[in-house]
Image (cartoon, rainbow, N blue to C red):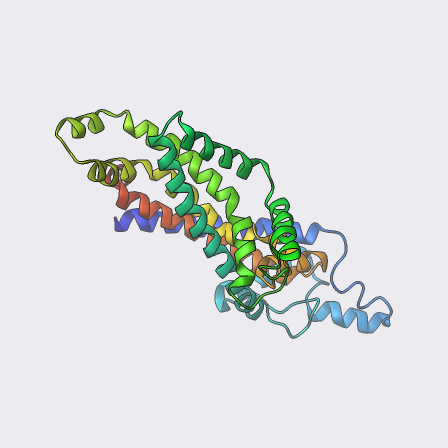
Length: 311
């Protein structure tokens, strides 16, 4: 198990370095820079001093070397170019808890409701509960989250005034964004879980358990769910990172001061260091989530750990 985890961590570090390198090159390919508008009317010498201060007068490969040195040796992303004095790390610490809270609520809601609906649909195949769950799944997959968010705002904030329209601060501010963000997850988990449960129900060991007289609750919990939930765990990993990525539009619609909202602003401002820091943070979270999924996989199904160690 230790070797299995160690190998995954090695893959994680290599992947993170590749993502960092590609992102660095891409943000420097974008036309313009964050200092262009600020230094437009300044004398040439002062403008040159600005560019020298932030290293923008150096070749891209030299800038990359300085960035990686500060990142690896000091864990320092630098400070914002668009807003001097604002540290990138401090910005991530300030805005990520907001996105984290919103995303965790959405993931918990999506996973629990989606898995439950998938199980109900599978055990009621071709009956009305199955049709209702599949209808919900089609709506959740077909309708974008920002459309649902706008509909929710109209019915629950404008027409009935049950929840705040925008802003952040209380639990009520999180309800509608969380539901809008989780609807697609509910649909995905429901479809995956339904298909997985139906596949498991047709396996020989389920028939053997029934023949031995195993009661229905024990059969469902120990034999069906444990084996059928693996696909749901697989997609859980990327969605953990998606709490920061997938909430970009939702955070803008509800004016939520989260990391997604801030990252969009940083891209518009050509704020290289801010974009790099937040992208690396999200990428690291995504890769770490995949590592957790691998470990959960090996705990749920020991055969995966054994085959992984034998390679």
